[in-house]
Image 1 (spheres, rainbow, N blue to C red):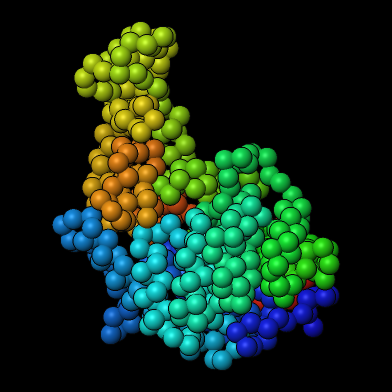
Image 2 (cartoon, rainbow, N blue to C red):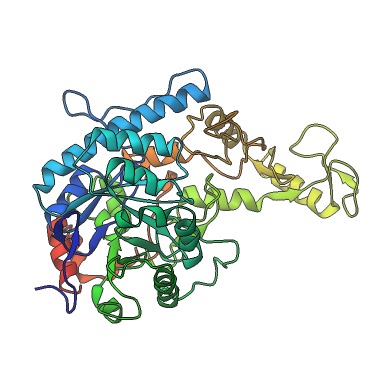
Amino acid sequence: MAFKGLEPISYGGREVWPLIEGGKGVSATNSESSGAWAAAGGIGTVSAVNADSYDAEGKIVPQVYDALTRKERHEQLIRYAIDGATEQVKRAHDIAGGKGAININVLWEMGGAQEVLEGTLANTKGLVTGVTCGAGMPYKLAEIAARHDVHYLPIISSARAFRALWKRSYHKVADLMAAVVYEDPWLAGGHNGLSNAEDPLKPEDPYPRVAALRDTMRKEGVSEDVPIVMAGGVWFLREWENWIDNPELGKIAFQFGTRPLLTEESPIPQGWKDALRDIEPGDVLLHQFSPTGFYSSAVKNDFLYDLIHRSERQIGYSKVEDGDRRVQLDAGVRGKNFWVTEEDRAKAREWVAAGYTEGLKTPEETVVFVTPESRDIIRKDQADCMGCLSHCAFSSWKDHDNYTTGRLADPRSFCIQKTLQDIAHGGPVEENLMFAGHAAYRFREDPFYSNKFTPSVKQLVDRILTGD
C-alpha cells in the first residue's frame, strides 16, 4: 500500500514508482545500488562520473594516470569513464531483473562529458532508459538523447534555467524529455545551481520555486504528463503530502540522494556509512570551494575546515603602491611586487610565525598562507591534473581548444577527482570531501536507523512508500 495519493508513473514503457535514486559520483551510486532500486520498482541511477570497472577476478581496476601530459591523462580518464559506466549499467540491468528502470547520471561540467555520455550510451543500447544531467547548462543533452533514443531529465535549480534550456534546445526534442529535476540549491547534496543572484545564507522555500517552474513549463507548452522531480531535502513523503496530486504543481516525483547512501547495497565504504550516523543539524555546509566554480554541499570535516581556514589566511595585494597598500609584504613571498596594508602585513607575519610560511598567489590578486607540506601537496595535485572537469579553477585545465583556462591556478580549491576517488574507495573520511544533503542529520533522528540498523534498498523503498 503506497502513501496516500502516490501512484506509479509510466516511464520507458513500464510502470514505476515516482521515486528516483539520486546519482552520486564518484562511485557513490553504482550497479548494486541502482539495480536494487530498480528491482524495488523505482528508477535507479548509475553514476557515469568515472565509475569503477573490474578485472577478470571481479576486483576494481585502479584508475592510474601515468601519461606524461594533461591531455593524454584526460584521454585516459575518458577511457576509464566509458569502460566503467558501461560495466556498471550492464550489471545494474541484470540486477534489476526487468523491473523498474535504469538511468545514468553525468555532470555536464565533467571533463569530456559528451564523449563519455555518447560512448556509454553506444555501448549499452537498450539498457538505459534515461539520462539525468546537471552541473552546468547541458544544451546538447536533448540532441544526444535523440541520437541514442533514450529519455533525458535535465537537472535545474530555477525556472529561469529551464526556460533558457528549453528555448535554445529542448523544445526541439520535447517528446524525449521524461521529467525536469528541480534540485534545491539549499537542500541537496553535492553540486547545485545556486546563481549569483541568490544568497547561499538565505534559503528559499522550494514550493514557490517549483510552482514557478511548472508555470514556466506550461507557458512553453510542455506536456502535463512531464513530472517535476523534487530533489533535495526529501526524507519522509508525508512531509510532502500537499505536493502530491496538487493541480498547481502538476505531476510530481521525488528523488532521494542521501538516504540511499546508508543501505546494504550502497557501495560507499563502511567508514563513510558510520560517519553519516553522527551528522548533526548544521554539519553540512553550502560552500564554493569546488574547482568547478559551482556551489556544493558537503559535511564539515577536517578536509573542509582546512579549506575554510586556508581562505581565512588570505590578504589582498597590489603590484604597485596603491592607496592604503603602502608597505611591501616581507613574509611568505619572494619578490617585491606585493604591496599590502600595514594591517595585512602584520597578519601575514603572525601566520608565518605560526608555521604557515608559504604564500601562494590566487587569480584574484590575493595571497593565501599555507604550511610547506600543504604547498607541496597543492602543487603536486595541480601538476598531476588528469582533466576531470571541463574547466578547473584549481589547475587551470580546460578540456578543449588550448587546454588551459588562461587563469592562474587557484590554491584555495582542491583536486576533486583525487578526493572523491579516495573517499569512495576507503580513504579516511575526515581527510576527504564528503558530499551529503542537508537532511543527513536525520539518520540520527529517524527510528528506522535505530540500533545501527542498515536497510536493504528494498526495505528502504518499502519504508518510503509508507510515507516514512
